[in-house]
Image (cartoon, rainbow, N blue to C red; front, side):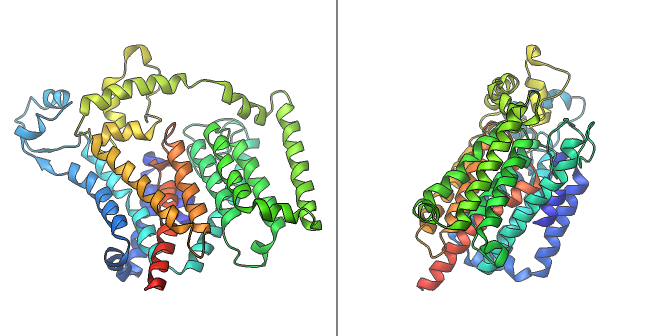
Amino acid sequence: MVISIAMGGGGVAYGLFNLAVQLTAISVLVLDRTAFADFWRKSAMPLRILVACTLALPAIQLIPLPPAIWTSLPGRELAVGARAIAPLGWHPLSLDSGRTLVALLGLIAPLTMLVIGIQAHERALSMLGWVIVAMGLANFALGIPQVLSPNGAWLLYPENPMSGVLFGTFANRNSTGLFLVICLTLLVHLPAIGPMTHNRMTRTVGTIVLLLAVALTQSRSAIALCSLPLASIASRHRSFLWQQLSDIKARHAVIIGALALGFVALLAAAPGSRLEHSLDRFGNGNEAREYIWADALYSAQKYWPVGSGMGTFDEVFQADESLENLSAKTAGRAHNDYLEIAIEAGPFGIILIAAWLLLTGWAILRNKRSRQPWTAWSGGIIITVIACQSTVDYPLRNQAMLAMAAYALVVLFHRQRTDQKAAA
């Protein structure tokens, strides 16, 4: 997980960094070879089925097909014309097998997290959660010079420098903001594992720091998604918080929080401030995304129902982009992962997403009745914020966020599996 967060936030453009994450994951599996077999024998059947289907989707798209089949698939006219100068041979369903292979290899890290995490002790999962929170605070520390330095200094991925924006260890500020929201979720819900984590003041200060860090990413989606972990605190601890207002330490925490919010408000009111710019972006529309979505919808219909192949969006979309929407830059992504999956995998991808969401909801309901309900709160919120941001961005297109999604599934299904063993 540490390697994924430190080196896996750059996406497909940084193959060597992704390779380091994948080789680390493979090494972990080699050190615990029995965990892989145990996962397929002992984990929940619905989880195994969905994991197998997720792995099978890009793998099937790489199987070579005879010319009579692949040339008749929807949207293959350009591919047939480009290969007409030579005898048509066998080709896979995917229009770019290299990109689809990269998509398949990208599942190694989350699969490792699932396989190892399901077998781990519950205290180890809590400790890993606190490690993730520490990595979030480290991202904030790294982001301070990024925000204060001009011309993209201190950026690990300088492909898209933005003055005054916190990127941390990610190439996309939306992913940075989402990761920090996940860290905030874990900070407020993880069980204590030591004296520092028992301290309410530690959690209060950490919450304020993470909220400030999210604001400095200037990610509108991440700022809005902060409301979910904050609302969960009030929902889960409303009676406890009311009783604790008489405690001297709690009063101090409230005073510190109020002062911090006042300071943030002053920053927001300052003309030209970075935080003011973050809030002003809520008033801006999504014109560029809407143009991409309109053309992407056409692409989805063009390749329906088989899709163009996982990871191939950037290649196929450039052939379908409207002339009036062209700009100096390529879209790169659909900025809506559901729409992008529809292009790359057709109804099979959409059904797979729906199945994962349904399975997650089922696991959340089961975990709310367990001895450790923090798993339902934290795992459910993590999956929810990822699903929400996927409507306007592409959070699961880097190794770090794939590992985070796998961790959320681990805490949900690990507790369920432990409860089943205890009942037996």
